[in-house]
Image 1 (cartoon, rainbow, N blue to C red):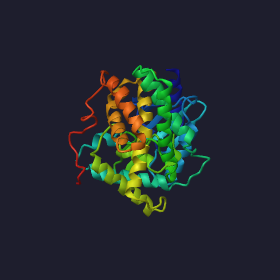
Image 2 (image 1 turned 180 degrees about the vertical axis):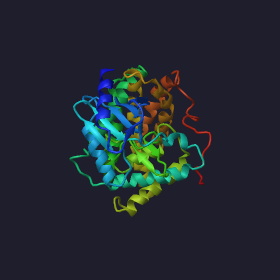
Image 3 (image 1 turned 120 degrees about the vertical axis):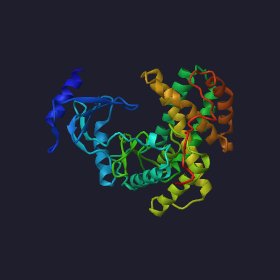
Image 4 (image 1 turned 90 degrees about the horizontal axis):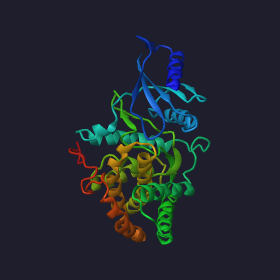
Length: 353
């Protein structure tokens, strides 16, 4: 409460020129994200977003620098009006409430993805400034997948792993990481999905939650968008979208022309890295941070993993291990949903509008 009191005073002091308060200042709490940030809508005209981002837990320098970089690249990231790095206070432009996720079941689904792809290509065209964007290294790719072992396998499912199991997982993770590293490396948002994209009043797309952006594999943001952990699109539509998006990168001069099979292999194995990591992160959010709603999305992520594993014989051992040791335990969990239905939406216009 003390921090919130100081944040309120700080916001009032740093209101931008032309912004007015019609009554005593009020900070209306908003739903947050998977991090430690707290968001509040300021009762100003126009409204603003105040953020309480603990500096020991959140990289506010990254957020501000990347926001500026994205805006220079013609993306609509929130303008940072003021920041206090020591206290972890930020005052941002308010992009509204229209997240893409609830809009994707409507008749404009394909158009929304078209607009999202435009922003994705803008990100990939940003200069790879290593002072702003760290490299998505092999070590980091592998480290992220170990979150799956610790939090999903061991802590959520209570599965004991033998040395042979760990060797099998290490071999599979190495194959997945090598596929990521052989791809063209571009600026990657790293969480480019329907809960971090917003429809703005003019119909364009706003981009949020980008502070973890890196220089990494070109298919990473494509996976985040088209194999979204919160909504599932038809497989054929996803393949078409991924190939078209990669072709846009070729046309923009940021990727070489390769076979469709190679694009999809990169895309699938990148999806494995992301979704293996996400199983661990969602489990950790539940077990450590008391954010239990993420359990509802685990079944869709598992569905993706199986779909992405089965076409690749070099990952056969991991596939068999997952099916024989993980799936039986998963099926006993109270959050488990039928994999055939996980992530499905009631209405879609994915065949075209």
